[in-house]
Image (cartoon, rainbow, N blue to C red; front, side):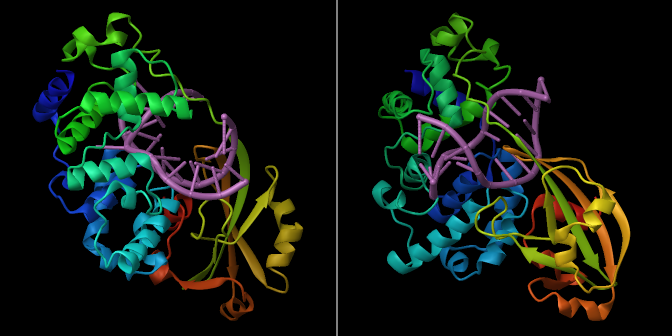
Length: 347
DNA sequence: AAGGCGGGGGC
DNA sequence: GCCCCAGCCTT
């Protein structure tokens, strides 16, 4: 049986990961959300801190969103944190604080799709759902020689059927961990270790030297350039922050007052811009430094960011009605995008 | 069906 | 530089 070969491989090669030492659906849920589009090595520390601060559904449900986002700071895809928080409140209100134990109820929760519902159903409740993530997709594609992409409903259906078939009567919580781990460590995207692979003899891709062709490549996303000029408006003890809006990147996170331009602009032009005038109208300022950072790359945007130091007098702070005057000592209570965090950390 | 949404690992 | 990562949601 193919699945027993994978499970056997798993028993010898699995990593010791913190969310594998529990059957608490809450902890498994947290780990699965964090692991969406995020590698294990990145997640571990966030997971441990998060569980430590929010050890239960009720702890998470009674936190405020800013606290939750603070624990998510730097992990990316912040809607995951907002959905997690929302779902925790929903479980408290609709399920008496007990994590639902059926796939159909689990998938109703915000931020949980087919993959995550399957994974939680299998890991926490040992229900027979085969989870298909990027790893499983890659393994199945190579093993059975399927060049269909998972981006279409047809492709999704095909890979789900293969996964269901491969799992057969294997224990769901073990089989799913096994094939995912197999994809992460053995059947890797680049340079899969085919020479010591237990599935070598049955693998379509190995037999036909298609490892570099399968699975089908994703379409490249087009990346746009944006030009951010952050104003670090400060004095000895305070500086200004604003909260980002609902539409754009970094939703609800806190940042320095921002002037965004269509192109790279010089400091003198920035200071003479309408945006500068609007922001600093009637304020006595001293531009003390301009610090250029390297481009901050998101998956779909290249952010060209520069920081401009603007020193102001103490009494001027109260003129910024719509901005937040933050004591430097408590700045870390505000969840911020990575570039702002790094800037404040002096890196 | 396609696009938006972070940040980092690893080559 | 590029591809990918235990995807989901909105349009």
